Length: 213
Image (spheres, rainbow, N blue to C red):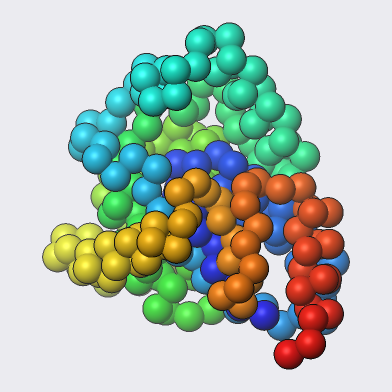
């Protein structure tokens, strides 16, 4: 089973969706899964220094402060249910994530679980520690923490490698109608949208696995 997980590293529902998907897959050990992480930027035009997240969300969605806080509380609750620690106040700013996607693309080419491990490491850096995922020092730190070659990672970041490939992938999924994430695409045919609970993913995966080839 091929699963393309389209997401951004600054998207809390993407982190929740990934952990939920992984919990569902644990209930289906008979499935042979190829999990690929595909790029999506919630804010492709974000300036280098980032922006206050409350101001950004208020302008982007027109949400009043009370609704924003209610949404944050729901995210913390849902995150805790799947083992994620969304620290209150950690996400005070939102940042550009393009270089993170370039590094994730490269990590995927290294095989094994490097891409998945780096994705989780970047989620933790942003949502739990409040770190800046556009900061090259952080990206290198997290790459090294999951066992990737830090010198090769530095070369990727400093030379602009994989810019074209990431842009092409982003354009492809936008053209396919993906305008919100997470978007979980199974076998290039089935779409599960949003940070669904584990049981929703499990039910969908069982149904898809039972389909005739």
